[in-house]
Image (cartoon, rainbow, N blue to C red; front, side, top):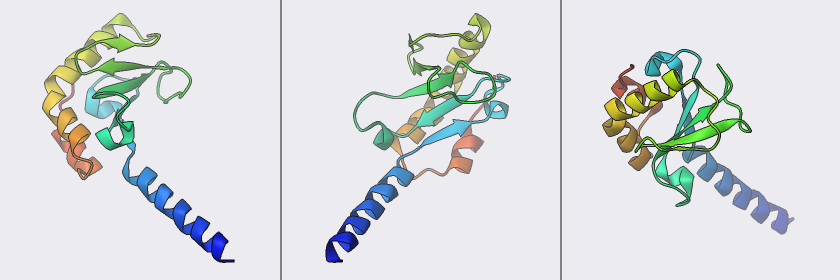
Length: 123
């Protein structure tokens, strides 16, 4: 019985870490790019595997975990890009005009989603 209790507590701690280290879906009303779904993560969620970046779904209006690409804050696309060249350029511009807010969110895991969204400018 004690072993089950210890395992349960360990699982609860792991779940708490996962909940606090998450990515945030940015609705297109905050990007100004209709149909393009963007995810922004915090540094803690990256587990030191990569630097600041956004993930972009190739599927309009939803995030597809198997069909997406990464766009670094320097504008470098990694993975297969299937969105239009115009939308890709708009995303690069969106990153440029929101770099301060994106980096603040990346570095500060305590920033609330509403606070983050309020700092974003759309293209």
